[in-house]
Length: 120
Image 1 (tube, helix red, strand yellow):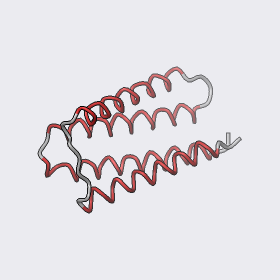
Image 2: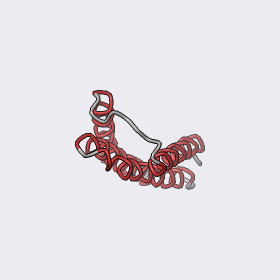
Image 3: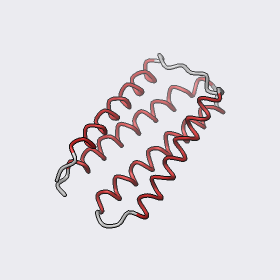
């Protein structure tokens, strides 16, 4: 059975990553990187990435579900890590870091959409 809802949500995440990439490349992306909200969101993404890895390691059965969880964990850890790195670097590095985060979300969305649409 194909999980269409999971694939659609991953496609939406791909578009969000594309928007982040576009804003970062055009220089229209600006945030207060030292705010508690930014740091808190970055820490939340890192924790969710770790949780996804833990869920993937405990998932029984389907290897595609484990792969989805692993891809999710890697992307959340990477994006959270990039956000934490952006908090400590100069403002000139914000664009490339957020472009990398957007690219990571695009790759994650495409990979997990392909895994979700794969016949089970």
